[in-house]
Image (cartoon, rainbow, N blue to C red; front, side, top):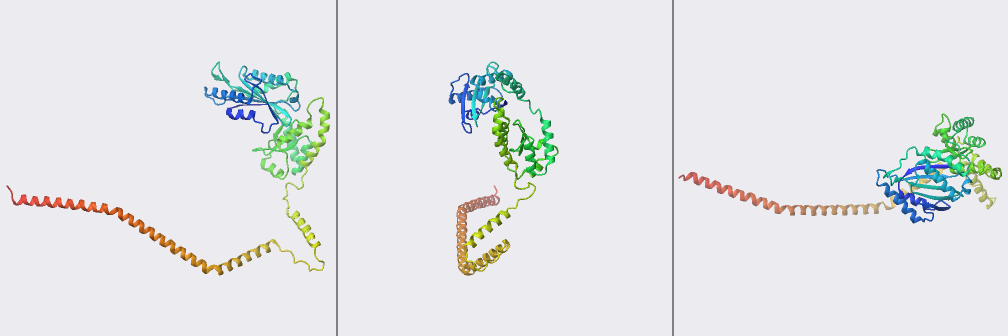
Length: 407
């Protein structure tokens, strides 16, 4: 059983994800706030209420979300009560007892997993339930759930990580090409797969667990791994996990039978993934297939010709073809210029003359508007200075009169 837990926000997106079919084969709402007959509308309403309650606190992460993913085949035997029991054990170990919750089942590719969402806001304390060390708490709850449901115990995180790293490093050092490494890894019980993002290559062990391939090889960087595997057609890590789990078997009663039935399919798939037409360290030569197709086409044309025809001229090289095309282009360009140069020159001169006349008219309009707006202002200034001069002359005459006729 695999348990994935996180603390999250965005209730609208969460509610939409829970009730949207998308890549799922089926969706079943088990419980919404204690109701087993809830519909999608009520689920969305409860999720949004949880989101609003979180606004009474300082956090915006209102939800504690856990995905319960039983082992391959064990999900088929789980009843409604089993899912409730698993959720109750998780709530007891993580401190979310008596909190409102939503349980939704998603069935995808024949496998069923559950999404359990708890509200973090506690109405009694008026605070959110702390999320310290929730991953460790979920890990401790997993063996309790498996024991209560009678499922096979899941090993703790990466118990054989050291052995895996040593084995993959040895396989890498013993091989020199991508196909050799993929084939050797498959024989050893591993499958090389394509990852995403910062992990372009993954390796899946016999238990269906995926690891970053680069981190499992001592002294090797991503650049070196990409150089060796760049031409290989690899399955995705999810597809590799499904294949390895199918090969491992689903239950103790049908383990050997299903393994025998799936073994040929897995072997064929692994062989097709492992084989490669070319060495990864060599560059491909696409000209080989091109020449082969050209020969077939020439034979087909020759079959309909008279045998007395003279042999065709030798095929021109790419350089000769390019040279002929360039010369033809220059000849056409020169001839076109000679024929149309006079007419084009006349048209060009007409356009230039018309543009010059238009610019001249625009300049005249601007000059007229400029001076027409300035004339009233100049007249006012002139009258102002004229009045000042009159006042000065009158004052001067009065002073002279006073000086000539003193009392």
